[in-house]
Amino acid sequence: MTPEYEILNPETVAAYIAGNANLTGIVDTDTLEVSEVGDGNLNLVFVCKDGNGDGICLKQSLPYVRLVGEGWPLTPERVIAESRGLAAAATYVPDLVPAYYGVDKENYVLAMENLMGWDMWRIQLNMGNSHPGVGAQLGRYVAALAFYTSFFSIDQGEIKERLAEAINPELCKITEDLVFTEPYIDVDNNSYVDELIPEIAGMRADARLRAEVGMLKYRFMTAGEALIHGDLHTGSVMVRQGANGGECKVIDPEFCYYGPVGFDLGALFGNYMAARARAAVLNRPAEYQQWLADIGLETWDSFEAEMRRLWPERLDKTWTDSFLDAWLAQVQKDTIGYGGCKANRRIIGLAKVTDIQELPHEEHVKAATMVLRTASTWIRDRDTLATVAVANTVFDDVREEVLG
Image 1: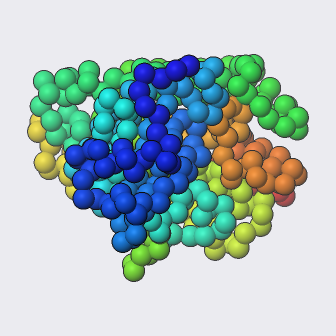
Image 2: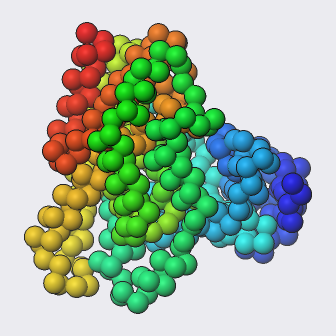
């Protein structure tokens, strides 16, 4: 596949920046050091630092899925969706995203702050490191987008225009397939160790579970509540230790579209579950395991508090406080269900998580079993579980079953 635009490489990045008027003055291109660090599934990522210590990061969409190769074509327009999500967050929660320098729509290149000194949160969690307060910041991030990009804050005519503009069908189709469809059928994209076959067979034979997954998929496809990140996991969050605890920046919103708010929260919760399972089988200190257990509650409480703080600003006062209560209850149930779906796909389907994959075999089996059992209960029983606090206890019970 020959792309119709220039694919950058470390040797050509300096010249590209020098020739782009929008990027003039951010870095000294004569002393620039460039590294390609894209270890994700889709794109090229170039981190650049000059002799003065200034930096910039460029992200370029390839015309195919990087994880698979040219055999899986994919529109490079996804970087436009990412720029839309980053620009929105930069407007409403600028402290929680990298500085945004613009997008080159002809070469599909997004320019943003180089987060020098920041680390991927998943890696830090895998190492057993804690960053207190990050969960609360992520709850605030989701709430800001949920309020300020929705009917709560924007005139209905403009929202409908934004909804049409933000359509992201190819990336949404990836989510629909990998999260809601493929884990529950036999397809080539799936892979797992033999010891998990009985667990997965039981899930696939559970008619009620399959029906609930279908309902969650339908809601993902039809509930255009707000502009959501679309892939908000612990690998899409950068962290560092600040003066008052952990700090974070959200990255990679290329799956951004108008969807259900609970999907972003659920993506975080599914990844928190994987981190908890890893810590449990590695017998990490009880204090650390409790901190992991509390992240979900911290995220939800912060989300709810921020929504309630912003609520008096809503445009339509026919949406009463009782309406907000009911809406939050629905988002909380969505969060639990989507958390289960996101956790299951990381065990069964394509693009797994290092939290589980890098464990020794015996620990891998135990951690994966914990995730599958907890996730399936979350999906099937989300209406009766109702709150993330109660859902959290499901993992505690499953951990006892698996580890004794």
